[in-house]
Length: 457
Image (tube, rainbow, N blue to C red):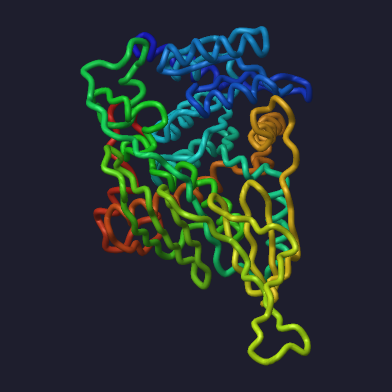
């Protein structure tokens, strides 16, 4: 961004931040989508079909991605949106009222903070932040700006999961003493790719890197595989896993920081350029309660199958093995999902449903299944979550958000705690801040060294 463009950004941002608007029930909110890759394409599909939104801006560092998105938008709505390469131009635009951020993880915080300071409401993909310091800064800025920030944890707007959580909180399985999140998602090896002296035509590589250290373009550090490098991603525990981490917290009543955290694992089987682990176990002590999390990216089975009850038929001779009793319903085989263990029973949940079992008999006491999605909405849970965000933008009531930044940060923070423990090889004991007792190396990982001018703070 040139100096003149930078001045326009700050002047435009100040003007936009000063502006206020009261929306009517039928008014469309002008939304700009920042980041038009895989998840950003989903944002485009959903917003272009929501009656309460109008896609007014498309932003990406990749010209080809902008062109594809524009073509798709015209096809779906017969309308074009403004195109931007630099997100700061989006935030300075007075026509844009809300932004939907689907960038790589390392951009989530700075993009959100810039947007908030420019007076925009923000929907940001998970995880909320790339490190713990960033999440704290996002919360601080959202409060100062008095703007809405919804994180893309769409399970919080999934009707059957909401009903399941209400039942657990109501004592369905007694007091929950342990919750477990599972991310057994098969990931292929990414292989090896050489660094290149220049990025592909139409790609602003400097802007893509943003807060991350400057380095040569590498195809593996672009388009999705950025998840597996510490500069830009957080591994699968902070990718798919942050969803299940959030659900585990949800079942426990959304606690804050744990007393301690420990994580072990490694990158097994593959010899490639990936930096993050493909196998990881984490445990968090909440004082009389525990949250466990596990990542398995190579071949594995699922969990959550109830023990089959056996009863010897009346009058059967001694030593006759009892027959197995068939379960009342097909048990969920949880590979990506959650398990909850209570003093009176346990429960399993994934995207295919929820099942709760009671007592030693393993009696199925509640089963919920997902509702049928609405055609053309690009995933009903996401559309419901975005509708919830837009409704909060209209009401200006932060409490209406299903997963606002204050709570979503706590879910992301557990992923970061696990990664810090894994990378330092040490158990972490937390103190107020948070910071880690007697561990300078871990404390340094609460934040990062930012590349100017892309500085969070």
